[in-house]
Image 1 (cartoon, helix red, strand yellow):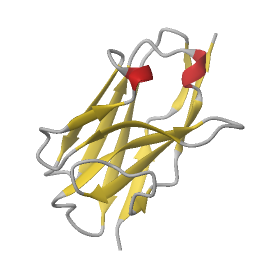
Image 2: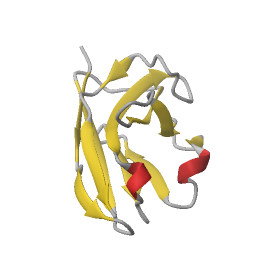
Image 3: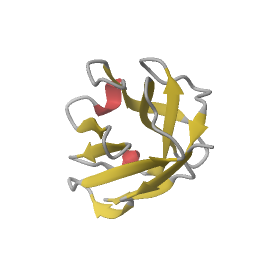
Image 4: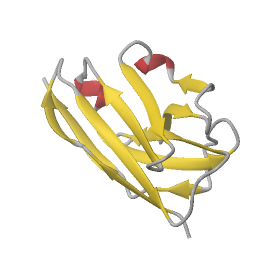
Length: 121
């Protein structure tokens, strides 16, 4: 049984930064991509970023390119999302996900409970 636990969310002013972490437990996610989705109130869940097991394959949504950076530490079974230049439209619950392969699917295999990110103007 794989568990994903997010941390690092919170309240930040526009232009600020946050770093999200997602730690996996249960077993090593060898061969799994890990990454992030988000869901704002009244909107559908959307893909944010993902990174493959070895790290060479990175995918970002267009709306975060240049502002967010995803990374992972396989020794710690943890993925990170560094979010800079945050804007109010980035306000959402951010979900960690893991899926076999080089990128995440909308119906990824494993999900965390989510962490709230709120950006004030």
